[in-house]
Length: 152
Image (cartoon, helix red, strand yellow):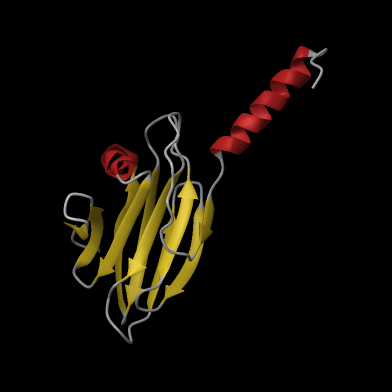
Protein backbone atom coordinates (compact mmCIF):
# COMPACT_ATOMS: atom_id res chain seq x y z
CA UNK A 1 0.00 0.00 0.00
CA UNK A 2 1.37 3.39 -1.02
CA UNK A 3 0.84 5.96 1.77
CA UNK A 4 0.90 9.25 -0.15
CA UNK A 5 -2.04 10.52 1.90
CA UNK A 6 -1.36 10.16 5.65
CA UNK A 7 -5.11 10.30 6.43
CA UNK A 8 -5.81 7.30 4.17
CA UNK A 9 -2.99 5.29 5.80
CA UNK A 10 -4.14 6.14 9.31
CA UNK A 11 -7.73 5.20 8.42
CA UNK A 12 -6.59 1.88 6.98
CA UNK A 13 -4.49 1.03 10.07
CA UNK A 14 -7.37 2.01 12.40
CA UNK A 15 -9.81 -0.11 10.35
CA UNK A 16 -7.57 -3.19 10.51
CA UNK A 17 -6.92 -2.72 14.24
CA UNK A 18 -10.63 -2.32 15.06
CA UNK A 19 -11.45 -5.42 13.02
CA UNK A 20 -8.80 -7.28 15.00
CA UNK A 21 -10.32 -6.18 18.34
CA UNK A 22 -13.95 -6.77 17.39
CA UNK A 23 -13.50 -10.40 16.38
CA UNK A 24 -16.13 -12.45 18.27
CA UNK A 25 -17.13 -15.89 17.00
CA UNK A 26 -19.37 -18.67 18.28
CA UNK A 27 -19.99 -22.33 17.46
CA UNK A 28 -20.73 -25.69 19.08
CA UNK A 29 -17.51 -27.72 18.81
CA UNK A 30 -15.46 -28.92 21.75
CA UNK A 31 -12.06 -27.69 22.91
CA UNK A 32 -9.23 -27.39 20.45
CA UNK A 33 -5.72 -26.30 21.20
CA UNK A 34 -5.31 -22.56 21.25
CA UNK A 35 -2.19 -20.44 21.44
CA UNK A 36 -1.90 -17.26 23.47
CA UNK A 37 -0.72 -14.16 21.68
CA UNK A 38 1.29 -11.78 23.79
CA UNK A 39 -0.84 -8.71 23.06
CA UNK A 40 -4.59 -9.09 23.54
CA UNK A 41 -4.71 -12.87 23.18
CA UNK A 42 -7.82 -14.41 21.66
CA UNK A 43 -9.76 -16.22 24.40
CA UNK A 44 -12.03 -19.20 23.80
CA UNK A 45 -14.80 -19.99 26.29
CA UNK A 46 -16.03 -23.61 26.24
CA UNK A 47 -19.26 -24.55 27.98
CA UNK A 48 -20.07 -28.25 28.31
CA UNK A 49 -23.46 -29.66 29.30
CA UNK A 50 -22.88 -32.03 32.25
CA UNK A 51 -26.36 -31.84 33.81
CA UNK A 52 -27.28 -35.45 33.13
CA UNK A 53 -28.88 -37.60 30.44
CA UNK A 54 -32.29 -36.57 29.15
CA UNK A 55 -31.88 -32.94 30.25
CA UNK A 56 -31.79 -30.25 27.58
CA UNK A 57 -29.93 -27.07 28.51
CA UNK A 58 -30.33 -23.67 26.87
CA UNK A 59 -27.29 -21.40 27.11
CA UNK A 60 -27.54 -17.73 26.17
CA UNK A 61 -24.27 -15.78 26.52
CA UNK A 62 -23.74 -12.08 26.01
CA UNK A 63 -21.62 -9.09 26.87
CA UNK A 64 -22.45 -5.42 27.00
CA UNK A 65 -21.79 -5.24 23.25
CA UNK A 66 -22.42 -8.76 21.91
CA UNK A 67 -25.45 -11.05 22.19
CA UNK A 68 -24.32 -14.52 21.12
CA UNK A 69 -27.85 -15.95 20.96
CA UNK A 70 -29.46 -19.03 22.46
CA UNK A 71 -27.89 -22.48 22.07
CA UNK A 72 -29.55 -25.77 23.05
CA UNK A 73 -27.24 -28.51 24.31
CA UNK A 74 -27.81 -32.19 25.01
CA UNK A 75 -25.67 -34.06 27.57
CA UNK A 76 -21.99 -33.95 26.61
CA UNK A 77 -22.35 -31.26 23.94
CA UNK A 78 -20.15 -28.15 23.90
CA UNK A 79 -20.82 -24.54 23.01
CA UNK A 80 -17.87 -22.23 22.43
CA UNK A 81 -17.19 -18.63 21.54
CA UNK A 82 -14.03 -16.63 20.87
CA UNK A 83 -13.16 -13.01 21.52
CA UNK A 84 -10.31 -10.68 22.36
CA UNK A 85 -10.41 -8.95 25.77
CA UNK A 86 -10.48 -5.17 25.62
CA UNK A 87 -7.65 -2.85 26.58
CA UNK A 88 -9.55 -1.44 29.57
CA UNK A 89 -9.59 -4.73 31.56
CA UNK A 90 -13.41 -4.71 31.63
CA UNK A 91 -14.42 -7.55 29.29
CA UNK A 92 -17.34 -9.53 30.73
CA UNK A 93 -19.40 -12.33 29.19
CA UNK A 94 -22.19 -13.82 31.27
CA UNK A 95 -24.50 -16.69 30.40
CA UNK A 96 -28.11 -17.46 31.27
CA UNK A 97 -28.51 -21.21 31.64
CA UNK A 98 -31.99 -22.78 31.61
CA UNK A 99 -33.02 -26.40 32.19
CA UNK A 100 -36.10 -28.16 33.61
CA UNK A 101 -37.88 -24.84 34.26
CA UNK A 102 -34.90 -23.46 36.19
CA UNK A 103 -32.89 -20.39 35.10
CA UNK A 104 -29.45 -19.50 36.50
CA UNK A 105 -26.60 -17.16 35.53
CA UNK A 106 -22.81 -17.31 35.69
CA UNK A 107 -19.90 -15.22 34.46
CA UNK A 108 -18.23 -17.23 31.70
CA UNK A 109 -15.46 -14.63 31.43
CA UNK A 110 -14.75 -11.66 33.69
CA UNK A 111 -11.40 -10.18 32.77
CA UNK A 112 -10.38 -9.21 36.30
CA UNK A 113 -10.99 -12.71 37.71
CA UNK A 114 -10.89 -15.16 34.79
CA UNK A 115 -8.07 -13.86 32.57
CA UNK A 116 -5.26 -15.50 34.57
CA UNK A 117 -7.09 -18.84 34.86
CA UNK A 118 -7.64 -18.89 31.09
CA UNK A 119 -4.02 -17.98 30.29
CA UNK A 120 -2.79 -20.98 32.31
CA UNK A 121 -4.94 -23.25 30.12
CA UNK A 122 -3.66 -21.80 26.81
CA UNK A 123 -6.17 -18.94 26.50
CA UNK A 124 -9.02 -21.39 26.91
CA UNK A 125 -11.78 -20.97 29.49
CA UNK A 126 -13.36 -24.43 29.85
CA UNK A 127 -16.53 -24.81 31.95
CA UNK A 128 -18.70 -27.82 32.80
CA UNK A 129 -22.29 -27.03 33.70
CA UNK A 130 -23.58 -29.10 36.61
CA UNK A 131 -26.88 -28.87 38.55
CA UNK A 132 -24.94 -27.29 41.45
CA UNK A 133 -23.16 -24.68 39.32
CA UNK A 134 -20.50 -24.17 36.66
CA UNK A 135 -17.09 -25.77 37.22
CA UNK A 136 -13.87 -24.43 35.67
CA UNK A 137 -11.04 -26.70 34.51
CA UNK A 138 -8.23 -27.08 37.04
CA UNK A 139 -4.90 -27.80 35.27
CA UNK A 140 -3.36 -29.11 38.53
CA UNK A 141 -5.93 -31.90 38.93
CA UNK A 142 -6.87 -32.06 35.22
CA UNK A 143 -10.55 -32.02 36.27
CA UNK A 144 -13.36 -29.47 36.25
CA UNK A 145 -13.26 -29.07 40.03
CA UNK A 146 -13.08 -25.28 40.45
CA UNK A 147 -16.82 -24.91 41.01
CA UNK A 148 -18.97 -21.87 41.67
CA UNK A 149 -22.55 -21.71 42.77
CA UNK A 150 -25.24 -20.41 40.42
CA UNK A 151 -26.41 -16.80 40.60
CA UNK A 152 -30.16 -16.32 40.34
